[in-house]
Every structure is written in C-alpha cells, then in structure tokens.
Amino acid sequence: MTLTTERPETREARSVRKGQHFRRRGSSDFTRPTLPGLVLRYALLIAVFALVIGPFVWQLSTSLKGPAEDLYAFPPNLIPQDPTVGNYSTVTDVVPVYRYAWHSLLVATGSVATNVVLSVLGGYALACMRFRGKLIALGVLLSTMLLPAEVTVTSNLLTVNALGLGNTLWGVFLPGAIGAMNVLLIATACRMIPKDVLDAATIDGATTWQRIRHLVWPNVRGMASVVAIFTFIGAWDDYLWPLMVLTEPDNYTLTVGMAYLNSNFSPDPRLIAAGTMVALIPIVVVFSVMQRYFFKGVQEGAVKG
Image (tube, rainbow, N blue to C red):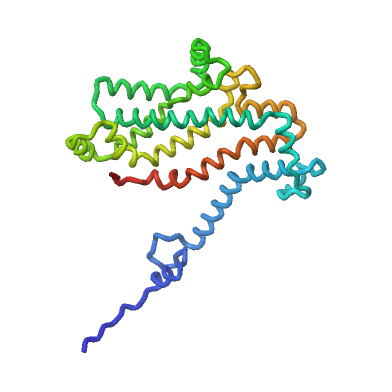
C-alpha cells in the first residue's frame, strides 16, 4: 500500500486562500503590498476620488438647494435641507435648453460618426498600405498637432464663411469632422495586426473593404471607442468655435446657451449649477454606455475573424 503525504500549506498560501490583501512581515510574496502600503494606497485613492468627484457632488447639491439655504456654510452641507427641482424648471424657462441640447447632440453625433469612420480608413491606409508620399502624409498629420487650435481659428472661420456655412450647425461641425490625433491612434492599433494575416486575406481574394470589415475593425474597436468618447466630449463641451460661428441665439449650442445663463444669473449659483448639470448629463450617459468598450476593448490584441 502506497502512502501519499500532502505538503503542508504555507502561511502565504493560507493568506491567499483566505483572501488576505496584504503580505505579512517576512513573507516572500511581493505581488501584494504590506499593510502600511495598502493603507497608503487606499488613502491616495480616497483623496483622488474626492478631488475628482467632489466638484460634481457639490454642483449637484447646489442645484437642488432652495433659496433659503446658505451655500457657503462651513462645513459644507452636501445634503440639501430643503431639496427642490425648481432651479431646473427656471433654467428651462429662461433658456431653451432642449433646443440647444439638440443642436449640441447633432454636432457631437456627427463628429463621432465622421471621426470613427475616417480615422479607421486613414489609420488603415497609414499602417497597412503602401503608397507614394506615405511619409509626407504622416509628417503633415504630425505637424498639424504641433499648432494649438487657436492658431487656425481665423482661417477656419474664413473658410466656413466662404462656403456659406456661417451661423449654421454645419459650420460648427465641419472643422471637427476629422482629427489628426484620432487617425494616428487608429494607425497605432492597426499596426498591432499581424501583417501575415492581412497578406493571407489578400491572397484569398479579400478586397480592401473586406479586410477592413473582417480583420481591421474587430481589432480596432477598442481604440475606436476611445476616439468616439473623446470626440463626443470635445464636441459637446466646445465653446469658442460655436461662439464664433453662430450669431443668432436660435442656433446656439448648449455650451453657448449656458454662457448666456451665467451672464444673466451670476448672483444665483443655484441656477448656474442646475444648467451645468443639464449639460453634464449626456456626457455621463455616453461614458456609462461605452465604458465597457473603453476599458475592455483597448486591451484586445487577438485577431478576430
């Protein structure tokens, strides 16, 4: 009869099995922090969380406070004593928020669509195709990123007015239809696709559109979601360019309309906070819907057929 002896369980194995998140003194498991290091990490996490989420919570609390509450009490009272949604109704009565939000949504959605489609096509061309002037095109894209956006505002405005698109949403949308950074991001993702796979698809008779659809797009969806999220946020929050293009209040976007609210109700921070929350809601919704693509899709490295 053969006897089998089980190896005694070590202290590190027992701590891992029990779900202990820090290593004890003298332990050789350096994959987990010590207890002081774990406490420090959580302290830093809480501090960063307070700095990032604190202004949002403060604005939300201010927008729900009644006219009798003191906004500058110390310590600050984040829970309204007399909560009300009257500030939001006042904002919508003074400013056509829904019309302005619709204008911003049109511009942002159009910018997302064109940036994703054109960036995938341009990124694929730069990363996977051979043509004359490829290095020149890449150099031009990189050179446009060296100039701040304010330098090209005047030339863009003259171009838009010359095309007859002044004081229109098309004039607001056109300069942001494609971004050099987005093309370079997609090109970087396309370079991760093995060249042998693309060559094999070409030998099998796949056209350029078939390669983009079945090989390129499944592998750049993560980066495309990054492009979509940042493009939407940039187009939604843009203030300077719509202010220069749009001259009639009926065509304003939401950010320009909220500036009108700020100039007329500066003595009442409650209304300004309510308008800020209205402008922030679509961004929160878009990021909540696409965050799984944002975090999971970027790490996709496998080629999918």
